[in-house]
Image (cartoon, rainbow, N blue to C red; front, top):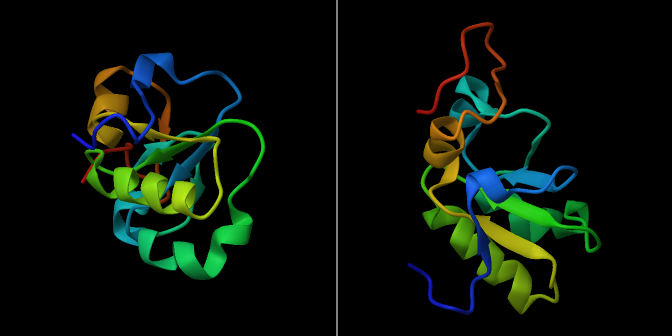
Length: 111
């Protein structure tokens, strides 16, 4: 989708201990996100880049992989070399039965 310049990883292949960076909007995050993920909406990335680790593996997540791919490209253009896009986003994460959590007391879901 983004070509060879955007490194990516599939949901089953996300390594244990990777820093999961969810760049979706607050309502999407509240409904359901990868367990242990960190929330930083896409539009806030430029002002909050210092919060994104520069060491260790960072996997960027959105709903389907489009926004996260853009964020990976943006971060790479700004010096990050440890970021990867989650192929298929949260839809793929949920389909792979990876752990999820919600913030609203309802079962975790992807919206």
